[in-house]
Length: 127
Image 1 (cartoon, rainbow, N blue to C red):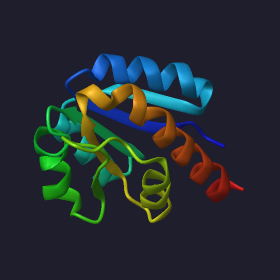
Image 2: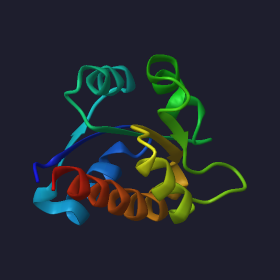
Image 3: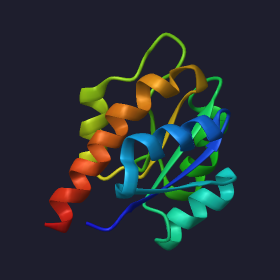
């Protein structure tokens, strides 16, 4: 399996990058980019997944992704009043979503199940 290419942007992007690299090891290649760089990278096939974080989990984290990739590809993982749901995360990854937004306060709770789902999907599709 080739390394999964993930771009992160927004609030706490350095924390997201560190956490993804620590949990994913050699299975991931993580880049900290602006949202426009990351989303256009997904469009061009240079990046496999985009993860953005902001105060709401939707606005700054997903606005560019929703505009350029469409609402089926851009998924809000958490927001005010809701924390990341591992079952929903896995379902959306399996459906082919490529861009994910979450509240910056939920980075530590949202990244492990998201990365697990992404790596599981990658191992199934490369086999």
